[in-house]
Image: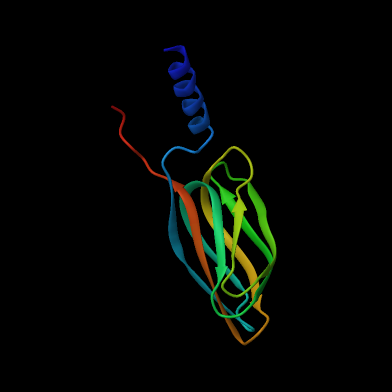
Length: 128
């Protein structure tokens, strides 16, 4: 019986490190052009990761910023988003509520680019 209890305890400890009830949700798409390289919007989600995917060609982001529930703003990504490849971003700090996202990005292959934004969000579940 001790062997089964140790196995059960090990299984419980392995699941404790995984964020509870996290799911990926599509937040929207952002369109950029050679004339329109800045975009900011209210985000209003809680999660520990974001994902950015360029859908129409490569897009270079000079900066992607997140403003959190505590009012602090952090740069969360700088770099190239290759067409149809997803970049996962771990959100910094202990505050996991994102209120606003701001992008400074421009397409490199053509005159337009689209970036899909998703987040690994936490579901609210009732106790009991």
